[in-house]
Image (cartoon, rainbow, N blue to C red):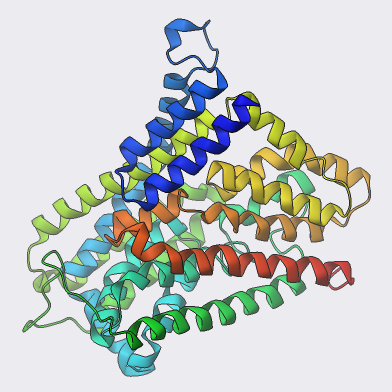
Length: 439
C-alpha cells in the first residue's frame, strides 16, 4: 500500500512541480526520492547487494542511458534548427508559406511541416528543433500568442502521424515484434482515425488560439529571438532543400540504421544549410554555441524525467500496477489499450508503455484468437495518449527546452491535442474494429 502511495504520489509530485516551473533536474530526482522512500527502496548502491535495485543506480542508469542513446540526435537537431534560423532560411521558408497559405493558415503550415518530417522518418524529438524557427517566424508574422507553438508542433508530430499505419516512428514498429504484423496493420481504420485526429485537433487548436486572441493576447517578442529585420534572406528553395535532405536521407537509411540514420540525415541538413546559405549567416559561431547549449538543456530535462521512470519501474507497486493492467477482463482491444495507456502514463513514454505491456498481454490475447492487426493499431494509438502528460520527455523538451515556454502557459493546449484528441481517436478505432472494419 505504501509503495503504491509512493509511486502515485511521486508521479503527481513530478507533474505539480513541472507545472509550477521547477527545474526538472531538481524535480525529477526529488520525485524519485519520494517514490523510493515510501516504497522502501534503498537509496544507495552500498546498501544493497551487487546488481540489486536502489535509488541512485536506477535513476542514474536510466538518466545516462537516455543521454547515451539520444545526445547525437539532440545535438545535431538543435544545430540544424539554429543554422536554419541564423541564416534566415527558416524565415524565408515561413514567408513563402505565408504567401501560399496566407497568415490565417500559419498554424496549418506548421502542423503540415511537422507531419511530413515525422512521417518521413525524422524522430519526433528532433522535428521540434527543426521546425521551431519557422514556427516562431510564422507566429510572429501572424501576431499569434507564442505559447501555442508547442501545441502546433505536437499536433503534427505525436498524434496522427506517430501512431498511424506506415509510420516509421518506433511507436508503430514495436508491436511488430510481439504480434508478427506489419507497419501497415489495420490501415483502413488507421486512415480514418488519423484524419479525425488531424482535422479535429487542428480545429480545436485554432479555436483555442482565436479565443486567446479575442481576449487580447498577441505575439510577444523576446530579446533572445533571432533578428530578422532589415536583412537579406535566401531564396525559399534554399531553406526547403535542407529539410528535404534530412527527410530523404532519414527515409532511405531508416530500415538499415534505424535511429542512427538521423545522425547522418541531420548532419547532411546542417552541411547543406551552410553550403547553400553561407553568405546569409549573421553569426554562425554564436548559432552553433546556442544550439549546443539548447541541446544540453533539452536532453538534460528529458533525461531527468526518464530517470524518474527508471526508479518507478523498480518499486513493487509498479509490478502490481502492470499485473492489474495486463489482466483486465473483457474485450482484448479495450484491455490492451488501457494497459498500454496507463503504463505509458506512469513511465511518461509511449514506447515504454508498449515494451512493458506487450510481452505480457500479446501471448495471452493471441491465444484468445484476437485479430493481431486490430490489436497492433489499437495499442499503437493508445500508447500516444496518456504518455503526453506534463512529465513526458517530448512535452518537457518541446515546451521548455525548445520553445522556452512554461508548462503553466503552454501545456493546456498541448494536453488537449496530445491527450484528449488521441483518446477520442482510440475510442473510434476500438468501435470500428469491433464493428469489423479492417478485420
